[in-house]
Amino acid sequence: MVLVDRLGLSANKREGHDLAGPCIACQSSDAFRLHIDTGVAHCFSCNGKWSPFQVAETVLGNRELAKSLLVELGVFQSPAKGNGQTATPPSPPQDPIQVIARQKGISPESLQAFGAKALTPNTVRLPAFGPDGKQCTHFDLSVRGGKGKFASGKAAGLFFPHEAGTVRLPQTGETWHLVEGPKDAAALQGLGLLACGLNTCRLAAKFTRLFKGMDVILIPDRDAAGEEGAQHSAKVLRGMAQSTCVAVLPAEFKESGGEDVRDILRRPGGRELVLQAIADAQAEKDRAQISDGGEKRDVSGEVLMPEGDPLTLTVSPTFGRPQRLVVAKRGEIAHRDRINTDSAVSRNRLIKQLAAKLGIDVAVLGPLVDPQITSLADQADD
Image 1: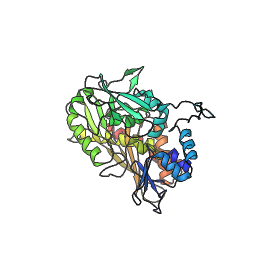
Image 2: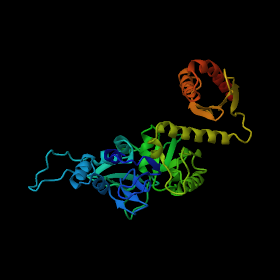
Image 3: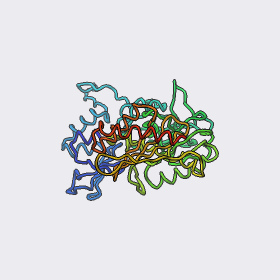
Image 4: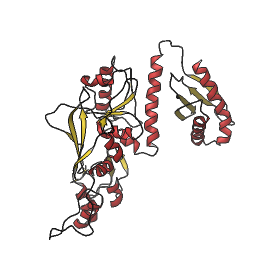
């Protein structure tokens, strides 16, 4: 988070949506928590609570310096002088879409792709859509932080991307990714995926008609509510969607406050981690569809290494898709990716990544692994 970096805080340990570290007020070494999106902080030891401004003021020990920092970060607007004139140097009006996108860990373009428009200098509004595909309500986000809120007294709605100013609803045969809220949906849109944001952690039955004939991938937060919500969503989609599967994000499961898509994307290599979770879910669904004695199955083979244990390769059928799952294991080391095994570029990319994990020269590994991948792929499809 920018505020943490600018203040030089040592809160570098992640706990769900919070950063943890030494308290800014008491002697505790690990009881301080600061929310990544909002900048709001608290301490379990001294029970202190701070707004982003109060965090800055406490650390800097100077109210004016704290104000200047938050103006610079776009949280505050530039103050006026006593004569009503703008303080020098003048600060341009903040773009709330830019500010909120930065706070939420997504790009402004992805937020705008979901119809976000600046309502005031401090508020952004997104449309939400009902079972008929028409806008039924709206959702407001503030630069002051918080999760956002729906319009009161109106029916709940889902968040969909827009194209040329018009809502982009699902079309038969497409693959859609369902997550909680517009922020994670916008993050997935930034990865080039079709994504819908739910109004809560579960899909209400009335919305299932929008996903008739779709391949649906549910990507819940890694906590009890998210897991339970995904199970409910899968049940109500059964018989309506063409297929449904659940992607498991690579994070520790928690009873509450589990990590979400944006949390994973913030990690080093986060993009690959999220895409891998989705690919694994698709592969698991494909295997389940043929588990009752279908003709196609995974095929495995061993590759002898110059030294040490052999490498085991497992290749899945394509199931009509251009890419297939390839899993490589050697001892405790495993690497998996969905690639087009007919493409030398895709195979070489996988081999380079695998060589780096195994600590083997790619020039040595390539001739051993490449022909085995193509051979197993042919066997899997026969």
